Amino acid sequence: MTRSPAWHARIDADGAVGSGFLISGRTVLTCAHVVAGDRASVVFPGAPGLAPVPARVVVRGHAWAGGDRDPGDLAVLELDRPPGLAPASFAPLDAPYASPAPKLVAYGFPYGYDEEGVQSELRAISSQLIRDEWAQLGGRRGYGQETDHGFSGAAVMVEGTGAVAGMVVSHDPVNHTSRMIPARILARHWSPLADLVPTPGYPAEEKRWLRELVARVGSPALAGALGRLLRAAAGPLGVEPPPGEPGSLWEAVWYLLSEAGRPGPGALPLAELTVRLAGLAGDETLGAELRDWSRAHRARHDPPPVAPPAVSHATVGLMSYAPPAPYAAEHTSPQTALNTAPYAAAPAVAPVPGPAVATPPVRPATRRWSPILVEIKRSGADRGALLVEVSAYRDGGRRLVAEQRLEEREVRAWVLERIDDAFAEIDTEGRELIAFALPRRWLNKPVDQWTTRKGMSTPLGCVAPVVVMDHDRRGSKRLQFRLKKMWDVLDRQPGSAVHGISCAGSARPEWLTVQLQDVVGPVGLTRPPRSPRDRLHTAVLDAPAPIVLWPRTGCAGGASCGDSCRGAEFLNALADQLSVLPPGDLPERIFELRKSAFGHDGPEPHWAADLSFVWEDPRWFPDVPPLSQSPVG
Image 1: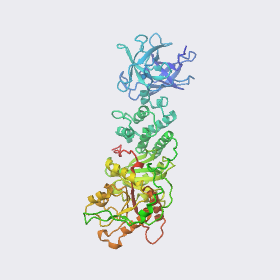
Image 2 (image 1 turned 45 degrees about the vertical axis):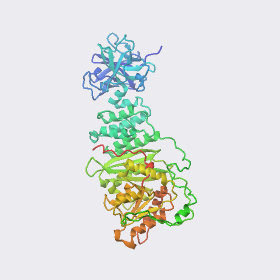
Image 3 (image 1 turned 30 degrees about the horizontal axis):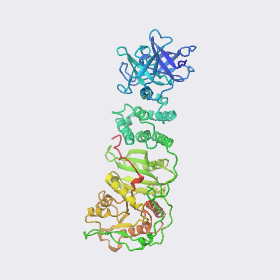
Image 4 (image 1 turned 60 degrees about the vertical axis):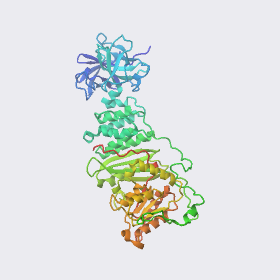
């Protein structure tokens, strides 16, 4: 015969008798309505030689107001001394609702059995909760002991395992049914219980660390933002958020812990939530600790390292290979301009001749990137504010590293610090690549020259390859489709003939957009954009040209510059450096050029010192949802 667990408890409080159960060395759980005062006496009938243990009430459910139908009817008792008994364990969250329905047992102390107690056999009527708080229980046999007075606070135990599924809270003598607060709801009301309730994929120590961090986040920082925060973190991962606004930050966190399923690569909603929360915490130390939790949580679920794939032109990541024999002939034959008729005023859009070579230089067979993405866009939360996200890509998925709403003057320092954090997330097997997705008014900003302390540190573009992407294009499904198709062609090209656009510009930029649809390769411009709506640059970006380069301090002469065009010199230098390289290798070559420019000591500035470089291969940045409105907006 199986012995009854010793953790079942009788609660004597001011003449009232109820039930409870030991959940840790000195902690007992019961109903709040069982203990009206601050003190109680706890008896363990399963340990007959143990004297009653005094206890004090340390927690009551914050939502319980004393009514029969109030949620949060639980109380936590702290024993004056440890009873030396093994505590209860908790069943899997869906255990009481299994099919066939398991036998559930409650141990209570109704009138006439207030010394030794009595058992009641129960079953869960449905997995659906009443008012998202109570599960309804019925008698298993239709007769027998009901959960009358004295059962309040009793553990509902799964007979086959002896594990606790919830706590009896009320009884209906007319319908002969009872209500149970399931363990999932108990932990929602009292967060330390989450350490004990099974949530697959989340060890107790990890949950304890998380809830302690969450408890330190001040409520004012999250006023009215919890619903949006939860949707932003869980929605893109396919997790259905709860209806309405969570009652507290812990409720939002516990929802993901208990409802979102087992975490795995690409499905880590709590990693997303904690990163977004770090940007709202208002405390740098706490923000860093939240990001540390996210990073450690991701590391636990990283898939094992995979060997680099075999060389294949179909593989995303094949960025250079030994070209076919006709390669030299292609690069020594005369270059001809694209057909610009019927518009006489159209600019010359032509391949800029590169060096004649007999064989291409020897390069590694593959180029595998480990991307870091910085996304900057205008925030709807405050006029003039920017919403900035830093993400790392690994195993084909995005990992949010940090998110913050910032004033423009704060962006540089914050981004550089978060990029440092992102290096801990990327795959060390690949070459780091830092990409900035910027609004068009920012495309000419020298992000590659950003340093932590002006004049004291190496520019970012000399630390790793840095490219720029157009945020507007990333939000267009049509343009992203076109770019992916273009890269299918670019992967098969052994060289990167630069197609230059002259200083004369275009009388009809829309015609230039049409022309460039037939150009698969880098497009070189002779000047920077003159405004966020510069028609020439807009035409090139909307084509869409996957690779665009221009000097940030380009030709000042415009259409009348003649033979002394500095822009033409820039295009010729580009062609000399890029024409023999596959398009996928260009970020690495621009990186080398930026290092050369940084170390240049000549009387004239290096031609690549102020080079803007748009390079967008969407395959390296897959399935990124558009930036949401700032959670505090």
